Length: 166
Length: 166
DNA sequence: TTAAACTTTCAGTAATTATTGAAAGTTTGT
DNA sequence: ACAAACTTTCAATAATTACTGAAAGTTTAA
Image 1 (cartoon, rainbow over the protein chains, first blue to last red):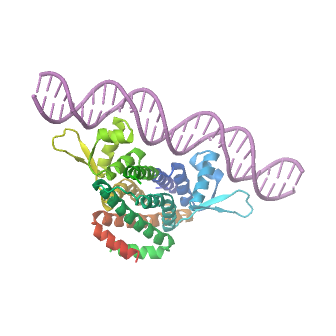
Image 2 (image 1 turned 45 degrees about the vertical axis):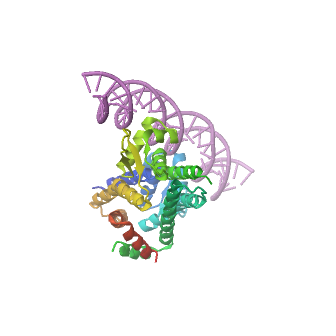
Image 3 (image 1 turned 180 degrees about the horizontal axis):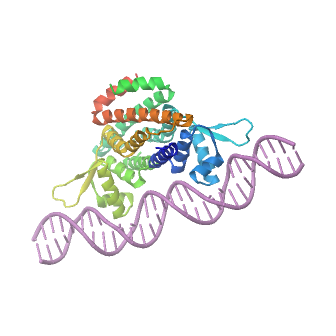
């Protein structure tokens, strides 16, 4: 297999994965492209490789920077901005966990908190509150683990995971 | 707070959460509705509660059944089908992990496996292969943990998690 | 200060995804 | 066998989300 072929394969799969996880296809394709590239790339190069417009490239590069997945790189003597993705998969996972946790876990935690003060005494209400309580238990545990993971270095996580899966 | 109000709140939030995780809003709303309901519900009732069409209701109920999140319930003397969601959050999480793992993690594992036979010897290729190797390492560990989690009962997971977060 | 080199924005449009509702299909009781 | 009660399908349509490209904005070097 040729290197280019392999890279394309990777970009494809990574892009599809992203889109089925609610991250847009272009954003994850750019991410994959940068992960697979040895050198930082300019907006122009990204546009050319993925055949996308300037606006689209720019917007998604910004999102990747917001998510902490991509960094600007200045190249001596060049005026253009270059972009590079971290290559450490653990770091990438940690970064994604952090963002998604913030954006999607927190709303649930907040909702469940508010739901505690239902006055109703019916059996129906009892059961609902029970489920909500267990949801709260669950999310707070997931949140806690996520926090540890986010603050951890690879090594800590690795050890704990090994421990977890025995 | 009224029970109905609380339930609506829950349906709303759960629906939004699903849609930002690549699951359609109606599907997660129905799921939430069934989680919050003491008794199993018919298609008619679901349609009325969420103000959605028959077709939409049917399709999404089927998806929920495919995912193993909802079960048919037969009610004595009734001809209609009734539906109920499991209320155990751990079981729900396990079910979702299982489905998503199958649908989205496996393609990555397969791709990375295939990518091993790149013949190129350049530095660029070296680096790419290194990243892919670490990706493989990562996915196989996640996969392994997921497997354990899926096969586990709540208690096993709980203990390991407690252990994990010290 | 000017203009070239580059980045960002955004209104319009395209592509994708979800929903409707009516028609076709199925099951069950008589 | 019939028809009522129910479920499923799917073509048309609506809603959402992503993308384009040109124009506006910004930075830098001379």
